[in-house]
Length: 360
Image (tube, rainbow, N blue to C red):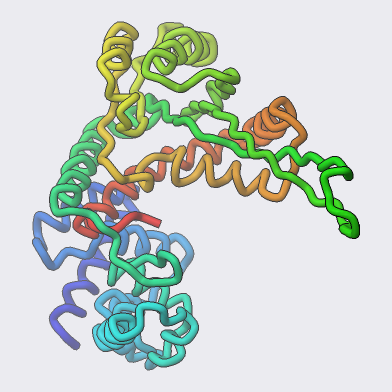
């Protein structure tokens, strides 16, 4: 048995003991790091172990073998992170950037799911125009993501769930609908029978904000109105803040402190917006550039809503908003709360991956 196996087995035993004492996984990872240093299991592995204990899985040898990527003595299979598999997949992709996932998995002798995990999470590649290319994050962007996630994770560790309970997150997104119109028959040359359709494309802009207790504001931006820093300031001051005062008060009846989590677009960073946030006493949480995986509206809310309305046809702006509003109201409070409560796990995963990979 290797020293790595022994170290991981011992760490897993410690995690089991601390989990029985209801210790938070972040605190467990911190305590192990202080003792084991670089040999500490990652935060994600610790979370997986705690899930194993909760579900009654106790096979230490098999779990540790999978973590370090060696052959398991119990089932003889190779772990997804086995170095030989990673090297062979990397060679295949470097030789043919257009190789399919199915072909690569078959040539290496692993499942497509395992190949996908290695390609995206280990090699840091994504598919663009049917080619595997690196995710282009500069060293400065990597360090920025790590620094921001460290800051947020440390603050969560210090303040606990109260930190997450004060977060209000949201963003703006376009919803597209198409309005078909039939051409007049006299515009066609003689002999053409089919009647072609013209698709007119319309985009409607919506702004949605929510917290762990559910939906706060779903606002359709009026037609012919551009989302500028001035309009965003109006949205915060005259729409979002009154909704918060109306729907969210603490047990003493006082208004709670607000932590706003939105992206760092030019509109959000504009002087007009920053002055409005200061006047409203709203604290803005840091958000690293090119990080939609760290904004709940981007990685969960809007993809979920687009999936709900995909394939639907709308005759006008009003019907588009009615459908979107219906789906917003059908989302449960638990779903919205989970998207925010999962943020600490995402922050720690960015740190574990050295800031270079987007969290899926």
